[in-house]
Image (cartoon, rainbow, N blue to C red; front, top):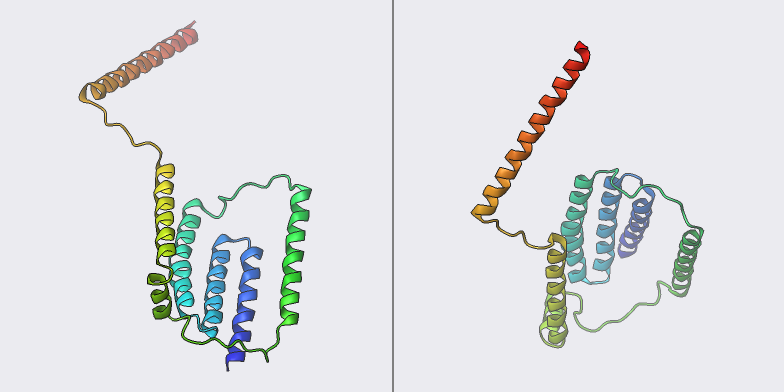
Length: 204
């Protein structure tokens, strides 16, 4: 039964991964990515990595994908960068990267057999085991990573919002209103003068 589930999840992961890059509609591509994440979570469950599978569904499929869909809906399907000149070295670099990935997949697949089972002692993939490891053996690394992520979140907010707006005083507000009123008065006077000149030109 595990072999059947493995092949189904692997086929779904490959099909959805191809659909992510093959679809022109960003909404369909995002939904294909969602299916790919779910397929990978099933494969992780087969490896008894329950925590990673659940975290991928909650974090990536639940939070990150919702953010992607909101951004796509806000920018629109035509919000991508316009077509430009495709540089030849970029094409060759993409072909080289794809060839290297294909060679790696072939080598790993050829060297692996279903008769070789990995024996792992203990419960290593459950939330309890990972939580115990994070608060005991890897506590310092866990805290350092949390501080780095917090710093990255704060830096993103600061760089994204820019400088804080300065509150204007009452005198500055009155001065700006007077300036706007004077500008509107000048525009109205200019419009009246232009209309008068046009009427005089038509009368002559």
